[in-house]
Length: 311
Ligand code: GLU
Image (cartoon, rainbow, N blue to C red; front, side, top):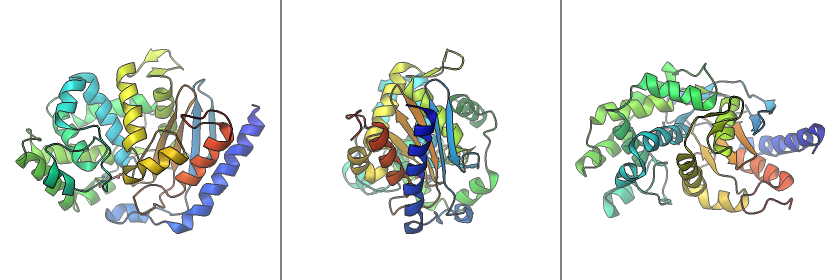
């Protein structure tokens, strides 16, 4: 398909996303996130050949929030192995909100999956004795091909002063013997990772590396092992959009991870990475522009994981 045709499809998708913005709201439970401009929208695509297509606010910096959960999970899987990580955290969609502790308290002895806060805090507790935050930031820069990634101190401080719920989850995890390292250190590491500033373009780069099975096509370097990449993409498809993951998988069919900063990272296997920035969120905490935007792309470009023809 020629570039012009692709750009006109991207513009159509962007318009669909923009129409949905008024129906959502920026996150305010972390007060600093409430300062974001609800009308911002960026769409960045990086193909497996390293070509970029950018529309809108693709260089605006915003905090990665829960998209960091896949970076921490990748690092944990690479260094500790699959069995050790999944002994502590499950692989099942939860059907619960991202910050729920109900199921964990009542029915389970491990968090449902590494994409909800209880699971991600558990992964952070595994990483804490092995890695410094600086090393994890470097890893994030490497997988996002973005050397400018750094912590947003204002968002970090803002979340740390409104951390009661995550702290409750972390101590519940300790009481169940799931967190065995320093609880406060695990909370801080998790929150710092959520506070890294990225752009839609950095997310599309990371998505592209996941799409290629872990190789940076620009250098030929293997950045992540194929086994880890396969696990990450599967968990993105089943759990990446919280309790909206099932409907998103049916309608869009592109493995995606969201963050309450407004970011979305999507992977079209063997084709492209997609990064979206739109801080107006739906009631589940996902970028509200994301679904119509990505559904349009999926249908027009044939990107659904189980239907690669155009609808
Ligand atoms: N730092 C956020 C929290 O723990 C991340 C949530 C998200 O992006 O979904 O509440």
